[in-house]
Image 1 (cartoon, rainbow, N blue to C red):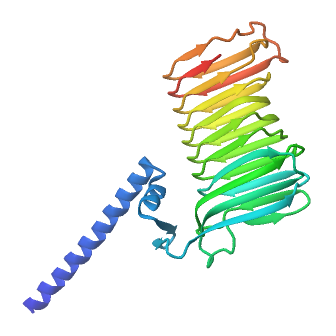
Image 2 (image 1 turned 90 degrees about the vertical axis):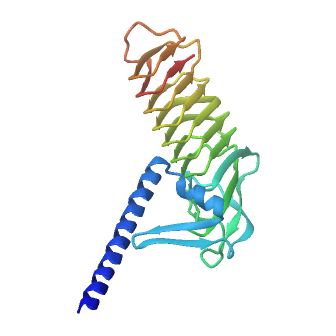
Image 3 (image 1 turned 120 degrees about the vertical axis):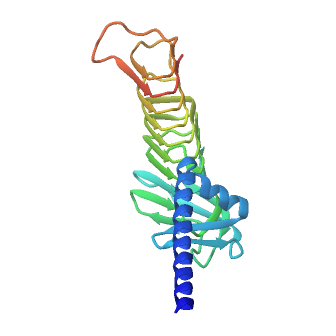
Length: 288
């Protein structure tokens, strides 16, 4: 009887220790991920593996089933919008004199999960380019867009970088979690940007309306046009360069950061005046 009780107690102790260790591991993992949302992608890149988070737990796969692939598409420009959805792939767009949209994608593909690097959905109104889930690594997407494509562009990315150069659009709606956004020589009425930790840089562009939200990334915008501007950041700095010939009504607010505004403000309150509203919690605000 004593032997039975001893083994029973030993078994209970082992079970208790295992459960406690798993709980501590889960708690530590959550704290580590909260401190660095890019932790999983860093581990994947370092050890050349892929981590899949599901409701039932975590699975890890290696890269042996993936082959380096390049895919190519020639697409008719849609009537209304172009939509791009990517998890970790970098996306770059530039203009072309051709009438077709050219898409070139490169990366490592698991063909058991997807036949190609991108899923392409076409209609008369829109084109949707989507990265297949858990099928691609090291994805890069390059697009050449006709100069006549003055339509809407929507890009959603998790950790990939976005770059757009020398395009004339109707709307650019860009959302990313940790990737950087770089825009050069754009001409458009409306620009909407949302990012968590990635930096945003807009240079040498003409924009009529700018809206931007960031948690910790910097917002740096050079706008050659007179525009309504609304920017909000929690801890990132905000830098804005505006035309000197236009007077604006400024509403600038920061809790712990500094404000530097070298642009002449319009003292007269008029509803028709262009407003520049910038708020940040701990970042600096600088306007030229």
